[in-house]
Image 1: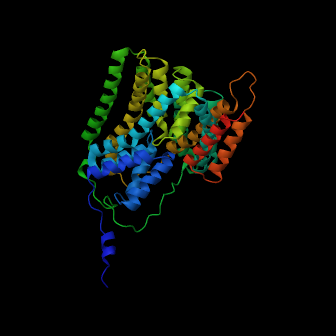
Image 2: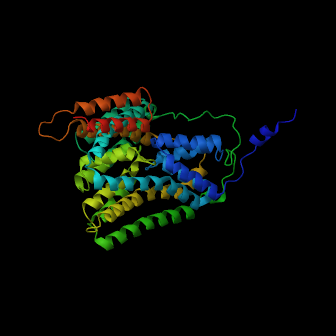
Image 3: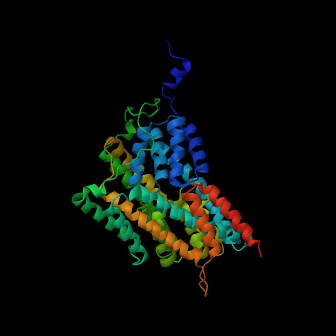
Length: 450
């Protein structure tokens, strides 16, 4: 019996995708990528694997596994990886930039409005409603990650130890990551069963329609590993970072805010294991407590703004840079230009390492396709991240529910909003955007009540 034409068409791989077609897809993704990394990865999977069939399920998951092991925003890195695999280095750079630029531009705009008009009652009311929702979002993130990660007594112990270390002992985040890594190395030898996590695939492997980059598609020439390519790409990326920092240092001195931001956010980019929530305590320690680029209240407002914009949540670094540049008046009376400069510097040094990791390291991953797996140290780091995120919820909750007033009375209205938001997220699986919109309206209404 002959095969129907529709069946024949669906059983053949899609036609090659031009760089122009890819441009419009990555731009669209950058404009609608709400919902955090999980939502962004789900969007890419639905569009690239299921609908367009640009890449197969197994190749998509293989790339995602590598990105999950790296510091930095995994959804951004996944977009860079797929763009690189399809259209070489220019495709990876294009995918990453288009994924980030809409978020950066929106956040610069919101930061400008916040610094110029943040004291207007309507805006203050909106932020009053959103901030308890942000606490609930962090709590829900810790809850979801703990359910996936804390599958043995040893991992639960590491999570509790990291929570105590950063909350009570005020230990720096890098030291906690290092300690968890060492515990994982030791635990992998002594108690291997306690540190072995079986990853759950996003979709069952089975028969599927052929993709442009399919399971059996040979590795393209540009994706083949060579030591020369690895070293040259790595050195080129490091040179870009060093030259940018040197230019900032020569223009204003090593101790001026922009040069300090360059160094600080370069370190932050290498410590973003477990997503943005995990590195936020480190950002708070540096940006608020050490450098005083912004206050704790402004940090909370920035996170509230970051939750309402597309793109990676770690783009909150642009808000920190904008407020820091504006507050320190690094260009004199030109406050807006100072803020934009701070936002661009922080974004450059935060996200450039992600491009370097993919363009330099992805050929190694393609060469080991089928053998990549999580090991004990990374499992231990994932457990420590749960404790760090829980400590972040405590930090934000203290500033939102216990305002810095002489009476130190609890803000029961904010607590009620936060509890309702947490229930909506955890029990009813409410979407983040809908939740933030509802809480913003609630705060706006309350601001006009006597």
